[in-house]
Length: 170
Length: 292
Image (cartoon, one colour):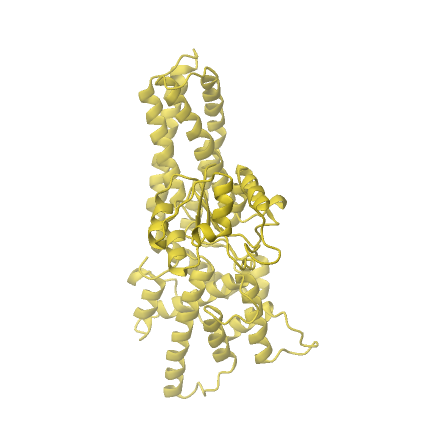
């Protein structure tokens, strides 16, 4: 996955879905479960969000795998870069970029932390799903709050993630 | 989406006048530093600011939460300017707020309505400008400036990765990578590489001939100004630093066989690379900085 595509995909996942959709939906569930708001449609919406999570989890996982690849191996220069600046200089410039990214960002630690939060959210949403899939009753606010915290935690971790540049002239 | 406005001209400013007329919350602290603190504490998602003080602007965009957006207005408008800030979530509204062709209150309201659409905001976040917002915000990607930045970074890395080199430790400090960094050291013709990059950026006519050093410098600076949204003829950083660097390299007058003169040249070159690199750090919104 090219760095530019990774940035877009992360933004779609982290801002477009996790923060703007899942978190907003879960907070609404908390308000309904605690009796602040009455809205029976909320539980239906929660089921939809859990279904969406199965797809979104794959996207989140692929974003983390892309980081793992960048940690493990140097980037290959783009043909346009190699033609313009030479293959060897491009390899060197991209490798410097990657090494600095590794040194400055504690990338391996951040990756591990993001994976931990991803697993935690997955566990909490599975619990929520198991508890409520057979009936559309209100789950306890406690579990919903745990889901909210897990979603917030994952969002924070994803906000910290970066990938090094993999293109010089584009 | 919730909006908050800050206009350093207070009630005399057109942005604050608009906000008053449409009941948008206003931060009306007379002290600009306090106003920045209020903006950073605000729960709103989107901020319209008219802030002329560079230091306050830099503090605001360095500390604003990633989930929020800042749109900066100016009396004279902005040339195309890349997104700014630690999270590149700060944008410049190009049309002016005063004088001929200024934004009307209705247009600011329209901009507000457009920004109420999360799709527009999400697109801006990944540097894509949807047609509906293009009358208000447009910018170019600083491809050439970034390429120059990555080249200078690699040159510094070569100094940083050469054991025993008298500039090694300084280079490591500039790169913010400490002593653990080593990307290896390769024999690369840096002046030749820089010349190739400069030639790509050149936009001045050379009538089919090999461009002169002067044309290369002029072409590069023109390209850089365009990408960074600077006015024609602008000489502030990083234009000045890049000009000094490429002029030095293109007009290398020293006999590099002479050890003493080579040492002097390298020290001068190092200083120029450092300044240009750090200026481009800021201009390109790079995360690389000292001590990271």
